[in-house]
Image (cartoon, rainbow, N blue to C red; front, side):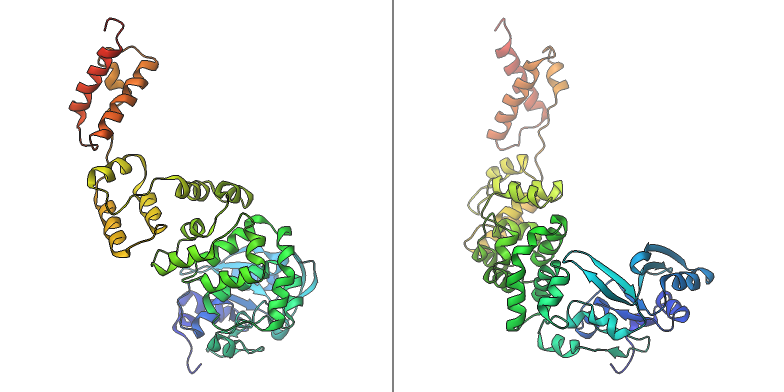
Length: 394
């Protein structure tokens, strides 16, 4: 680079470089600066031991949190951004899930333990980029390569299989080399030994890519998709959803992709309750259709949140202009609120008990049949009629 990127001059980051002049920016900030993509987090690496890093920062009055000292990571908290600072490391032992590391002062040795060439670059304060494994060219060509031998890199941490597809969905545009394809295919059966939370984190990130379809197709081809989603998938349905211009929402995209039991998938991968309920609801909520009049739409809105109804329309096919108009109509209609409560029925002289709920259900059904437009007074009158019907005296 000809000049230092502007973010390197931010006051907080500049103060850290003053205290740690030997540090460099690593990871996503380097990769995304070179590819002119937005980023938020900035991470530093340093050849100094974490205790020395903490001592320098603390003496200068910079707040520092020992977030992972055993692995060489501390978090500095200057006024404008939190920055992780990690001591250079080399792997001593790996088992496919965890690594034992030792500290080093060798930048190339640290870069050699990283997953992909595009993630193995570092940037000095003046903007100089150190690229030991051809990451800049790979980034420019849309080529995603492991650092060193693909099988060895994958064997160190099988989660790198899913990380590959996450980065491929964003940065890859050319077919991976044969050694990479073999390593990914051979490792697919080992994904079952990973933490399901980590698997879902990576898979949801793949689905959240601007266009994940090429990456998902490659996953399917190599047997990785079936290992992650044994419940069954329909990649063509996902492709249609993306083509329609639906939001890059991982749960919505999962609802299109998944053909098997949604609840089983959600429980197996320990999705959050909110994500689980939304995924299942996208299978079960009724579908609003372009030909529905406002009365029909109000009935749907009375029982289903508008966001779910809108999301469900993205999963349908047909004339996209008509579906766009329907989504606009759904968003513009006020949400109908049934105007009666139990106390309104009690005020009619109905004693507490099951009759109160029964009357409310019947009046609400009458309100829905009428298009959800009857006001509180009209509903009270109808409740009175139902109360008289239910009265033992007739």
